[in-house]
Image (cartoon, rainbow, N blue to C red; front, top):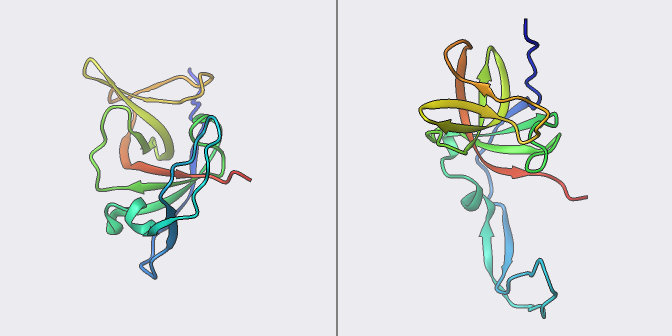
Length: 148
């Protein structure tokens, strides 16, 4: 009998509440990730983070993740913004309920076969071949994690 190893799990789900716009200033200049460039003090405009992060407010949730199967892109305790109205596509990161357990994985479609794949090579892909109960709960559109 094979052991179930699912790794990165959803540990909490929150509904986004309507409220005041969350605005921050956007600078006109770009920031180099390579060699430094002169900075500009010119603020282009304020943006509303709701406009940037939410496509469909009524179908959008924030989930908190735990585990290391998606390390590299998603870390333990990150928050994912998940849109339940999006149709999952090849290479999307999805929140899926597999055998009653909510997981975060990349959806891979190859030759008509569907897999949930971890970014961490220590975890095997999960083939979606009808042997397991599966519901794709939503598509992750953004990942929020602290840098310090």
